[in-house]
Length: 207
Image 1: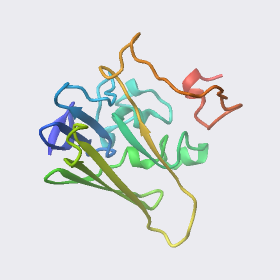
Image 2: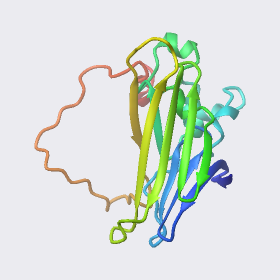
Image 3: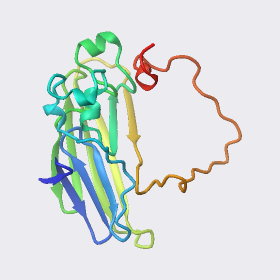
């Protein structure tokens, strides 16, 4: 186990890449290109703490909303399971955070050479997820490849739908104000009309 921005983590690397995963939430916090010294993944500008250490009274700096426990420990890429977006008022009262439990639980991290095995159990949703992250050297011309395989297991006796979303956040120095461009061949776009989820107010403030 290592420390990454004050957080418990595990890392794998070869001569070109380093991948770092946080124990709290299982976030993929870093995919570092050693040649440039740049990782595209976002590091929050506020202090990051272990999700298990979050307490709304002791940590008011993360806000008092349903997203506070997520904001306390989010970094880079996070898994949204088994919901995407804000919980309903009933789900929030039961302890379900924004984007589900996966981003706030403590994960088991096991390193074997250039592979990290990540495992986490969601007690409220009764789900288990497993992820294998491997640095593959076969594509030397591209500077190496990171392969991610993930599975989710329903631990309950009944079938039900789940939300299972990969949420990546990019940040500086990979993104540069006034220089970074996103180009697309799209000619039309449309925003979602109306409220997308119960926690939409968090973006614009309470009405």
